[in-house]
Length: 103
Image (tube, rainbow, N blue to C red; front, side, top):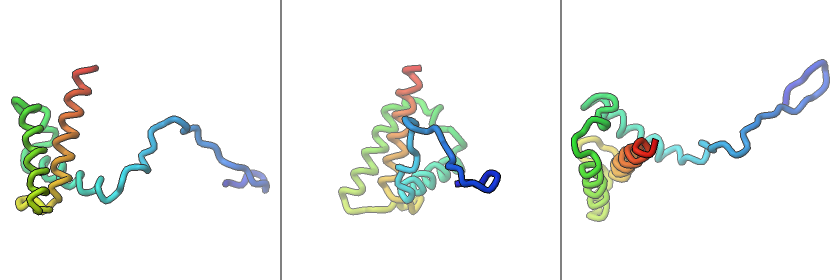
């Protein structure tokens, strides 16, 4: 609430029906951003958009990271970041590529 001329007023925000980013699990989000930051440093920012055969290669990468978790390996040896976060990044890239095709 805010006070105007000594009386209390209730603030308004018209966000009904808009995406609620507060639903994003914060620890998982941070882990995914760690992978993205590592990749941007190692390769270049948005390099993933320019990879030849990206759809097949990122699908395979996601599967490799999921397979590592099934083999009871939680963290990627190179990055120290959870394999699920790596898999999620690959899936985000695949989703983004698909959505860009639709536009």
